[in-house]
Every structure is written in structure tokens, then in C-alpha cells.
Length: 144
Image (cartoon, rainbow, N blue to C red):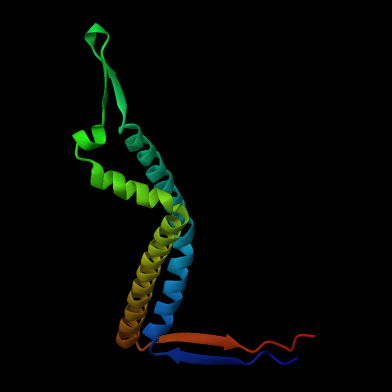
């Protein structure tokens, strides 16, 4: 019976581009679930904040002697810019969700690419210092 043939290869360097692409893909995939959760939470928070600020536009105050007055706290507290921003963000929740998810996934991809570059740099430094990594391969019998 023949023993399987073995081949030994020495890896002297690792391409930074290959590991950074794989790191970017892994980072994007890892970031996707928390990014979607974060975007959903922001969309809900914007909706609730808009409803609260909208309720401040006409607050009815009961004064002594049976008098009542309506006060617009948005104008009184100079919250018009915030109210306009909340209204515009609340008008298109799907766009806000998609934009925030995409931004967070892109941040995850960038961090993954940086991790891939650091790993390839460390592998290349250790290969330069120690002569490279030795990989031993074994030939497998044909699969029927």
C-alpha cells in the first residue's frame, strides 16, 4: 500500500489585499445584525421624539379664576429647527433605516479591512523574521 505523498511549502508573505478584502466582507457581515437593530431603534426613537415635540405645539394651561391659555412650547423654547428635523426624518423612516444600516455596515467593513491589513502585516513580519510559515500538504486519494 502506498503512503500518501506529502508536499511541504514555505509561505514567505501574505498579500495584504486578499486579507483586507476578506476582512471587509467579514466585518460587513458581522456588523449587519447590530446595524439593522441600531437603525430600527433610531427610527423608533425619532418617531417617539417627533410625537412628543408635536404634542408641545399646543399645550393647554388652566389658570386660576377659570381662565385657560394655549402655549406653544416649540416656539417658546426655540425648538423649531429640531421639530423640522424630526418631522423630515419621521416622514421617511425607510430611507432613514436604510441609510443608517448602510453607514454602520460600511463602518464594520472598514474595521474588518483594517483587521485584515494588521493580520497580514503581522504575518509578513513574522515570516521575515523566521523564514516564513511551513505548510505541509497531503495528497488525498481520488473520491468516488
